[in-house]
Image 1 (cartoon, rainbow, N blue to C red):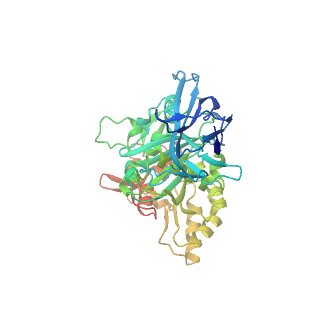
Image 2 (cartoon, helix red, strand yellow; image 1 turned 90 degrees about the vertical axis):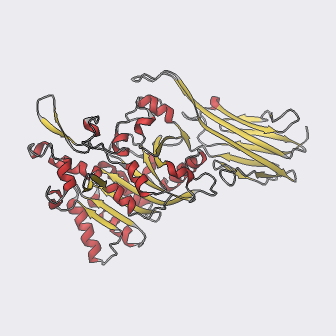
Length: 468
C-alpha cells in the first residue's frame, strides 16, 4: 500500500477512570465498494491511534466511542454497569493528498465541537486530530450510585446533565439548563457557576453519592394548597422533633434555580462543580473559564444547546455561592476577576476578607453585577460594601444588597419571611432563628400574594445574561 498521509488521533486523560483504554473504540473508516472500511491502526498506545491512509483516498471518517464500566458499588443497589460516556463522528475530505478538511455537520454549522484538527500534514506527512474528552456524560452512573433518578432532580422545562470531568477534581459537575436552550439561536451561552456549601467526601465516580442537595437547589417548593407535598417540599419551615424531644425548624426549603432560568428566559447554564467536602479543586482556580468553556462545548455537542447554530461559545460568566461555598467563590473571583461579569453572594463565608476585592472588581467595569444577600451572618459586611461603593460614588444600577438590616426580618415588613416561619415563630429563638435566617438567604425572596420570587430568580431577571 502506498502511503502519503498518516493520521494521528489523540485524546487527553486517557487510561483514567472515565476513559479506560480497553473501552476506547476509536476507528478511522475509508469508503470502499462494500461500504465504509475500518483501517487497522499502524500504531496504538494509551490515548493515541495512528492510521496510514491509502494513496488515492479522497475522504475518510473517524468514529470514536468511549465507555466506562464499574463493578457493583458498596452501599448502593447498583450492580455492575457499563455505559457509553461519549460518542464522536466526523467526516473529512483530503485535498492534494496532504490537507485534511473537516466536513460541515449541519447541526453545528461546522465541524464537530469535540474535534480539533490540524488540517495540513507536517513535513513527515502526519495530520493531527485531537478529541476533546475533558468532560463526558456520567448521568446514568450518578443516578445509580446516588439512588435518585435523574427525573427526580430535574425541574419542569429543564435538563439536568451530570458531567464527569476526566482530569483533576472535582470529578462531578452538574449542569442545569432550560430545555429552550436546545433551540436557542444565540451562540453566546452564559454560565452561572454555583459553589454550594460543604458536601460529603468522594474521590471516584464509582462510589456511593449523596444527591439530596440537588433537588433542594434546583426544584421549586410546593404551596400549602397542594396536600400531596411532603414537609421538605413545602414553601415554609416545618416543625420537627429531634431524638431528645426538642422541637426544631426544618428550614431547608427549595430554592427554585430551574424556575429562575425558565421564568427569566435566559440562555444560561447553571454549572455546579460538586465538591469533595469543601474542596472544589480546579473549579476554584484560574482554570475555571476554560473548564466552563469545555462544559458548554460538551453540552452543545450532546444536543442540549443551540441546534443549527455555529461557533457556540461561553459568553458572560457568573459566580454565585451560599454559606461555606464562599470559601471557594471569593478566591475564584480573585483568580478570574477580568473574566467574571456577575457575582451573587448568599450569606456566604469569607465576606469580610473579600470586601475589598468585591469593591475593586465591581468598580472596574460598569457592566458588572454584584448581588449580596445578608441573611444571618454577613449583614454588617454587606452593608459595609454598600457604603463603600456609595462613598466612591460608584454606579449602583447593577448592585443589590438585601437582608442586610435586622428590620428585613420583621414579619410585618417582609411577607415572605412571615410565611416562611409561620409554623415555627413561637419556638425559642435559639432553636431556629439564626440558621433559619441564614437558609432564607438562598431560598427566600419577595412575596406578592401567593407567589414568591426568590432572590436567585430576581438576580437572573436583572442580570446581563443573554435571552434564549
